[in-house]
Length: 71
Length: 153
Image (tube, rainbow over all chains, first blue to last red; front, side, top):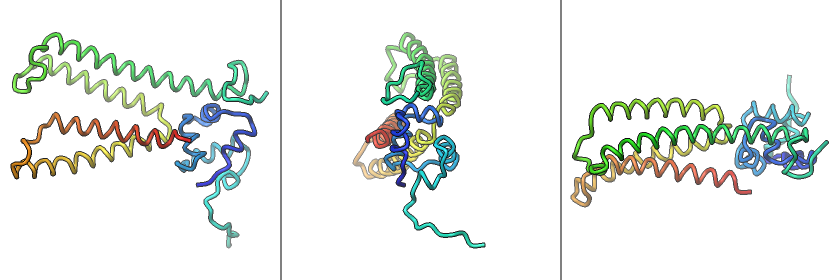
């Protein structure tokens, strides 16, 4: 899954280890997510969302077209 | 203050994450060192007492020694697994799961093949210690493969 993690991390001047420590995962895990080799679990995606102060869909892109919710 | 590189100073607030990650790595190393110590002591005792027939599978070892070693191994594996699982993140858990699956497949495929080739007279009878070795090698190989895959940029 594509994501903006590397950009968001670089904007804050954080290393992969730094980001990993902040969300409770290893540097390897951050690298795996950044390179799209691992899709994070929902709890981890929420931790990232809270850390960067933005919605999950603003960080991750599943490549699907967005559709409005129907009531 | 934001840091611009991956080598943030300890006093820098931005290095808090790196400090936590370093501590997690240190805890994992400590657990592995503890397990290695138990294995080293067990191996040392066996080597000192049974050095002459260490690889002779037909000769038995003292029952009490085997019982003590079996209990020590079981306790170390259970305690070590619980302690390590608390340090793993989801990528490491995924890696372990894939490695265990690969090892199970290696065993599940390897043993019947060997059995059939033995029955056909092509190979000697399946040896449990070689099958166990195959399981370990498959586990380590798959772990290394997935770790390498996740680590490469």
